Length: 194
Image 1 (tube, rainbow, N blue to C red):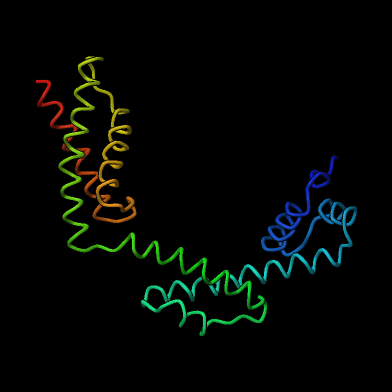
Image 2 (cartoon, rainbow, N blue to C red; image 1 turned 135 degrees about the horizontal axis):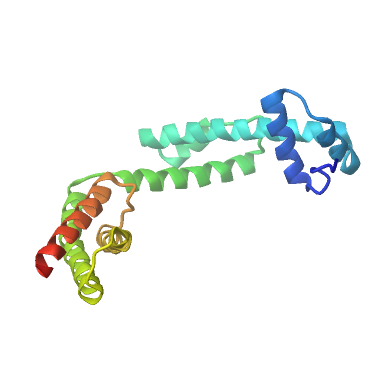
């Protein structure tokens, strides 16, 4: 029987080792043989276990940064209050800054205020007209309706509303505006054709 792990690179072997030990608690003979052929087995196991612990540590830090961003803490406070014994201070700072930036963007995108509601309503109106014109053009040229047309209508309406609001569909108000605009576009286009 051919050893499927023989052609794995180091990254793939680490993933296979961690997956197997997490799910079965042991390593099969083929994987052990492939690791031993390419690396010192004990050093490989140490590196894989360190990587596993490092992933957990980064998850802990990421969770902590997320929690503090949701509270509204600024980056200086977060940098002062989060530490790690596993990650060097320079790498930790870079990691925290990246996570802070990522979570701050998500928080800003998800924020709902009067401005977003107004822009979404404006976008809903403009997108409904745009979507209706799209449907009318397609229905006039083909003479038939297909539910597959809802996908490009959704994309067109989303791009219109995104352009007006600057928020992605992860924002609930934007998502609802896009959904409603597609429904209005569909109904309105049938009214135009009739």
